[in-house]
Length: 317
Image (cartoon, rainbow, N blue to C red):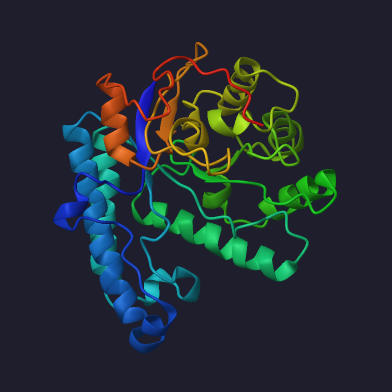
């Protein structure tokens, strides 16, 4: 297993390194796309800085922020005044990633819903997902599941089967380079989409691989145990290393007042492999610090006095 983390590097943050510089709507209205270009260029340069730090620390899996280009729903990248400079810097990221065998991914937000019954939401989703693919194209990353764009199906709208059918129909409206990268993830609510749902309703229909989220599976099993679900998800990636997500429960280990589905700050349990090779993004809140803590075998003990680094088989529902 190769471990990675998501978006923010807490080790570099005190030095001002960040890849998600943005602005509020009023600032965007005042400064427009030239300022978007300035922030995007700074973000892209810092992505490379983060990747260099990652390699120095033996980390080869990294989820890039969706906020690299602020307000990217409002313009084409080619319209940015400094587009050519951005393109040069973006290509450096792809070159560095390929030279060092780094797996880069993106995870658009919850407002991207291909299964929505509302056409305006679907149109905005298609634009946003295609923009994510254009970012990867700028970086000259593989137009394949080696550089995945990971999303959830979204709501069921009272009819899960119809929602899955809409997802598949709207998937075909995406740009080819988006389709070539799009993968789907199992949900953390029993009423939503399990690995089994995604296998039958998406993978068998349009071929999107399934990102297995270990933590989410505890809330939405689809009648499968974790080992079976992990293997079923892995089977959808063919000859490409599967992507997985892992975190622990904040409610169980850190703060009993939050909902069970909240992600923990640190890693407390051993990450199971189920006999599979996988690239695993840690979704814990302490980011790179949690990865280093886990990899170095440092146990985090909270006031709950639970059992860090033991395999956790607790029903959290």
